[in-house]
Length: 312
Picture 1 (cartoon, rainbow, N blue to C red):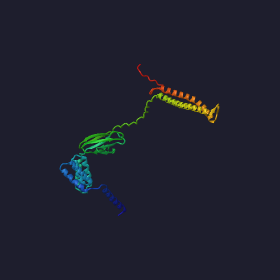
Picture 2 (spheres, rainbow, N blue to C red):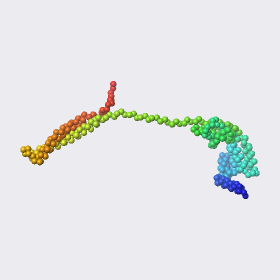
Picture 3 (cartoon, helix red, strand yellow):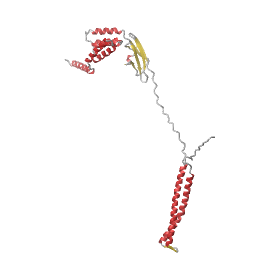
Picture 4 (cartoon, helix red, strand yellow):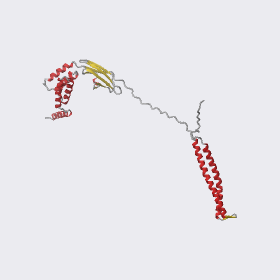
């Protein structure tokens, strides 16, 4: 066997193995579904029969199941589907199988009854997609006569930046229908909001100064200074009296010993301090009293603004 033949044989083996792995079959379940579908069809339950034939075909594809499914689809009015399934079954049979002629005859009989629809697009739009019922159709299908089952169908046109637009049509056996589709107008792009400068909050006028509080503070300060000066004056007065007593004890006829000299010096110093302290005390206490007694009442504005209340 030549090398090229080996390559083809190996490729065939891998293809078969790949197909078997990609589409696992369940022939037992497929056979049970096939028999159940035959029973449902005998009892007139066409929809159930078609669903079970289709599932049997999916689990274990076989041309015999496919022509039974096609016959079932024809019974419930899906002419185009049945026509295509009869045609698909033909190449699946082995050469010489009597069922080939049967499937070909059934397909020919249905062909004239199959409705067709031609889709056109009024305006070509970038990115447009067309959906027929649940099936998406590419733009290559535009202008082509497409087989379709009789009944009501919904065609939807979608395009980026546009609302979808739908058209529903009814088509009967043997009819050829042209459906012109049109994409909706482009929706205007949302404009970005224009930033507007924030309105500054109204500025409050100058706060009225609390003249009463400030004046009271100075009043208390002056009174404190005056009180301290008063205490100093009293201490100086006591010092003068003590120095005079010590002077008398240590001085005779203008002659003083050391303690007497110290007493004379202290008395002289306190004599200077006392009047100054009492003067400061009088000014401080008097000024503090004046400031405290004449301060404005709380809440009275002393600013330059004028407030007028009343009727004119």
